[in-house]
Length: 148
Image (cartoon, one colour):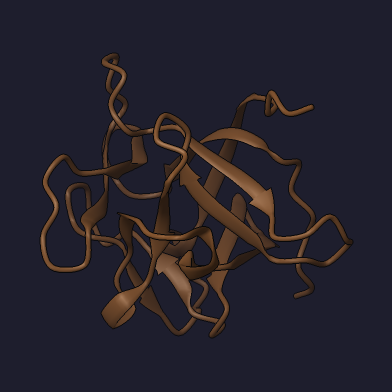
């Protein structure tokens, strides 16, 4: 499927896994390549569950970067086909495209691998895309970016 455009802004990214609502979440403790990114329950505390999604450049079809809304220097990176958040220069952040699938969107890396949420609490892995609900996500728009 062709990539779809996504409005730049702040989002909560919901995983389609069995059980209570789960969100893409940065864990508190860094190891190896940064902080592992998992799915976790919607938490009323202001922990790392809101993400800024914006295109790399303002042209149609450009890939997107995703980084923490509360820590603008902490972006998603993909060592060892797993998802991490790390404070590295934005040029080192992973780039993503979005494809429409039944029930939501598929988030794909530059290598064409899909984000997969195996179960709540598991680190997000990148896998060859298949029509599986663990690879389907919902982007909940929270607010626009406050940019001038």
